[in-house]
Amino acid sequence: MYYPTTRLRRLRKNPVLRNMVSETRVTTDDLIMPLFAISGKNVKNPILSMPGNFQLSIDLLVEECKQLFDSGIHSVLLFGIPETKDETGIIAAEDNSIISQAIKAIKKHVPGMFVIADVCNCEYTTHGHCGTIVNGDVDNDLTLDTLAAQSVTFAKFGVDMIAPSDMMDGRVGKIRNALDKYGYYNTPIMAYSAKYASAFYGPFRDAADSAPQFGNRNSYQMNPDNSNEAMREIELDIQEGADIVMVKPALSYLDIIRRAKDTFNIPIAAYNVSGEFSMVKAAAERGWIDEERIVKEILTSIKRAGSDIIITYHAKEFAKYIK
Image (cartoon, rainbow, N blue to C red; front, top):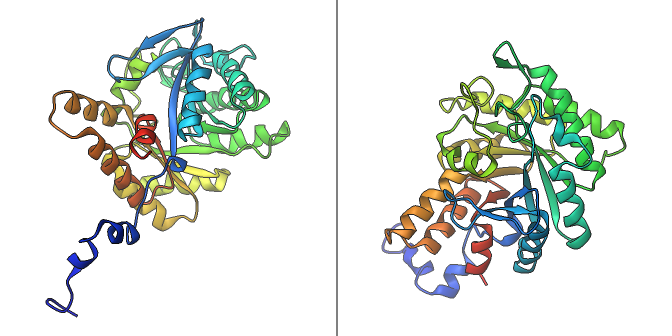
């Protein structure tokens, strides 16, 4: 049928009918809020490039989790800012590491919160790279041992899911084997499978104090030019035991999300990263955009592209928008 018999505007005229035929809806169940843990008490350091986000000591991190949980955000992704750093990042695997303490505190005081630990080394190394440096480059296989040790420690303290973000070859399998060896076979892995070497990470490096001290991460994070390679990365992670695979960043890689969703029968996560967040905030502060409408549209586009899970710094605000 064609116009005038078919008039698609009929389905848009009434708001009740528009909602009935809505194809994509984002809810708080879809969202994960990233949080940054730091040592001390009553510490709330503003992240200037990410308005409304803070480095939080564990006491305030717990309070933030309580507020998030009450608002309908039931999952958080933890990043740690340690007091000291080392050459390999193995300090993150210690029982008294900042993330170990944070997991323990959140699970004690907000037991219903689903806690995910980012597993990487860039926040914990003196050089800011995601692994052990040998001859000026990250040594892939040495780094795997550190990542596995971190994962087992976090599982011991009650983490609900492990999220390796380093982009080393073979790390999902190494972590899966280590978790299973110590009896944590029910701990799922959400792999940063297609993590691109993106300029959109700039504000995060301020938040996590994780900028590389030399060079860049192009030898291990993905080339933004490539799509087929992303499918290979995702397939390998699935074969190694990933339960969820992630595309990062989200907005410039919606095509990768869609392709992954169409190719693989597995839950897909997408990370709406710091630079994407901060651009919205900057434009909203200048009155150039309607922030609420923009945030809803962005998150809807990520879900519509095929993501089942969205990691976003907008999560807390979005929960307020839809109440």
